[in-house]
Structures are given as C-alpha cells and as structure tokens.
Image 1 (cartoon, rainbow, N blue to C red):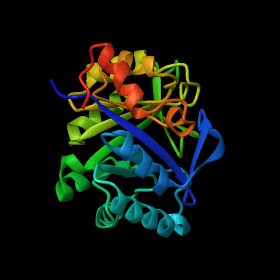
Image 2: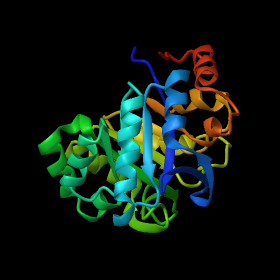
Image 3: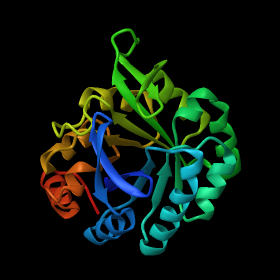
Length: 252
C-alpha cells in the first residue's frame, strides 16, 4: 500500500507566509524559507507554496523564495499561484520547483493543461481546485477563480473529471467553506472527487487537529495538506503522522 503523504502548505504573499479563514483576513505567519526547512526536518513528505497575491510585479519575489527554499530542502516542492503559461512553468522548474499548480488560468483556457502536459509531463502538473458549495451546480460544488473570490460557473466534479482526462498528474482539492475553520476536511467533497478521478487527490482545507487527517484518507485522499495547524505550532507533522498511523493509515 502506498504511504499517504503529509504536505504543509505555505500561502505566500509578497515574500511572507500568510494565513486566513475562508481565504479572508490574511495574517503574517513568518519567513517561507525558515518554515519550509522546519517542516522538512519534522518529516514532511512534500511542501506546497501558493502565491496568494500573484501579480506581475511580485513574480521576482516568488522566484527568489522558491530558489532559496529549493536549496534548503530535499523533498518535492510544488508551487502555484499566477501560473498562466508554459513559460511560467518552465521558469518555476528552472528555479527549483518539482511540480507546478494551475488553477484560474486552466479554467480560462483548458488547453493550457494539454500544453503543459505535452511539454513537461503529467507528473509536473497539479490541478488546483478552490471549491465552494453551490446548490445550483449538479454536484452541489462549484469551482472558483481569483483566489476563491469569483465563481467560475463550473461544476467542480465535472471540472476535476476534465482535468484528469486532459492528463493532470494530481488534483489539489481545497474546500473554501472549510478553509481555516479547523473543523475538519470536507469529506463529502472528497468522496465526490474520488469517485470521479483516477489520479491522486490531495485534500486541503479544514484540518484542526491530528484526528482530522485519517477521515480524509478514508474519504479518498492520497495526500493531506494543511497550513494553520502547523504554522501555529498547535501540532507537528510527526504528531499528525502518529495519529494517522494509529488510525490504520500507512505513512512514511
């Protein structure tokens, strides 16, 4: 059985790690390079950076952060936020990223997925879905753009299925409704995505204690991602893995 990965997520804005609740009220959490090194020492299986304020003028800052982090850690690093072209992907890979996440740009131009997969391979591409509950959608879930601020008018499960058919390597499924609430992952959402997808699914949004992680795996997640719970020092990656192991989940 494959081990379930535990992935700390660092939301980065203007070179600093930030965190909010339901994508609102961002507060400073520290230096991304220092936090990345700490999590790698604690036993993180991978790291994810999301540039939550991705703009043209901020691109240089993020590339520098990625490069400095890649020099410090020896686990896979995924970077997302503001990726709009295959050149953006090439630039991030050249600065030390192992995988690249796309979100809004792929919704706007689904063929971007095809181009990235053709040039770099499926293993490089993570399709990130910021999902909110929306009763008007067939599945009850809508995918959003622009950091969760705009509904895309697109059913989240149908979009996940299309992403898989176009060759994405992984799906990062982030529940906006659960984000930062520390009340647990959105298990209904995870089950729905798992049923539709054949690629690995990363669960994100809502972790508040070590006991929350195993249910996400039972719901279909191949990896579990969290931010606040680690940044606050509430628990370590080792404590999360211990709780998962106790619940019968295979971890490294």
